[in-house]
Amino acid sequence: MSDVITFGEVMMRLTPPGRKKLLQTDQLDILYSGAEANVSCALAYWGRTAAHITSFPDNALGHAALANLRKMNVDVEHIAFTDGRLGLYFVEPGAINRATAITYDRLPSSFAGIDANTFNWDKILEGAKWFHWTGITPAISQGAADSLLAALKVARKKGVMVSADINYRSGLWKYGKTPAEILAPLVDLSQVVVAAESDTDSIFGIRGDGSGYASTAEAMKKRFSGMECMLASRRAAPSASHNSLSGVFWNGNLVFETKTHDIDNIIDRIGSGDAFISGFIFASLSGYTDQEKIDFAAASAVLKHSVEGDYNLVTEDEVWGLVEGNTGGRVKR
Image (tube, rainbow, N blue to C red; front, side):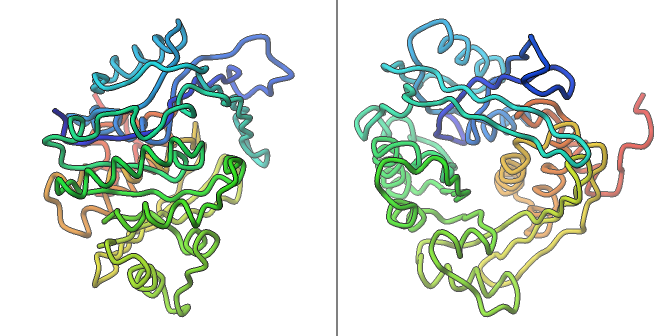
């Protein structure tokens, strides 16, 4: 039994050492990741019990991915082994004015072949406090979307808090359905929604009145009555090596914003959005105030830029240190 359940595909990440391009290297570093699994790994690292639900092929690659999650103290009891392959993605790290480039090689994956009957959601969600999903999962296949819808119906019946990061991946929606028609019933079963104004507009055609984040969130609430709050990270990226980031949170009534963090000499920005919602979930389960929730979420995302790989391996104390203004200029002894 775990506090937090996450659901989504896990892939092998292959990256040239240093900041080489693929055509320059004869070596690739192996890591594992998935947007939702990144959340479970961060929460487990902070001491929360977290389980990730996915499907792997029953071969050496699938078992290696399983072992990686287990190493991160994530509960893997309910992971299924089904036909298909382990998805891959290749990362060419960006630098200065060259953006990070990602190439996917993921279909037909084991996860894409799941359906609404693959997992026993009633058993999986027993005793859970939180369920997290992203817009990547229902974009992969109709079966993945059906499985997610089944999970959300059980979660709501059991009173489990549901968060949705509706990040849009245009290259994934290949099975004949539009994002809006698949995502709408899923978002309506979610109380916490991660979405920037550009997301709500591009997916649902929902815009505020231009007066600020609250107007967009209120427009979303009118469309999705189950939604209780909405949050987003805001990023400026003058170069691949230098960004800035802040957070905004509408709690159903008021808006809370963070300071803008300067992020220079970025090591790896992949997974920073997952670190953002991980921080929010952790802060919410820990009983923090609304301002503390969004401060902790934004600081978590900022610190993820200092960690290679997709998992956010920073401590709770390090996150609070950044919230309080410790930017890491001194050596900790």
